Image (cartoon, rainbow, N blue to C red; front, side, top):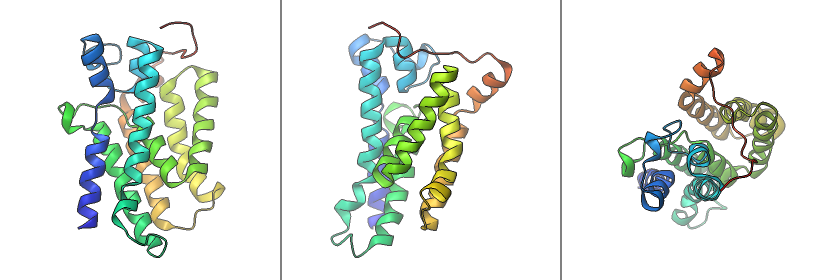
Length: 209
């Protein structure tokens, strides 16, 4: 029962289409029809500007972090049931990212799961999240490709978990592989554009609204 509640709750949390709702209710447009046509923070920055972009980014990260904490509400003595807690957190995390990519509240057309993935990693392994964020920023600032930064961080994530953090839990290592795979698959069109040299660069630090 805990497993089912965790999956459903995390998926519904992840399914909150922040970018879609911000665009629709405050700007009367569907972000999925503008810019890169992606319902995520990057496209919000590109189409609507910094303020709505920051709001979407923060909320999407919080979605992931919140979903990964759902198991704490289900297990009474989570210190004793440590392995069970980890298993449920992993299930919740995957559910949240899947919900962000295929949100039930937005016709299953969501974002690419990067911000939500960062959130779930923060909830489960904060140090790994910090290192992944650093990898993303280095690649993004040097290349100005948000997608390349996200893909690189996703590729490095399993190695960070296994060899930098030296996480002994096989469950968490498998989770890192699955999460990395989900993010990379969500960026498959970006990978094609990067290889063709047609991917759009972006400067989030330029002046603007």
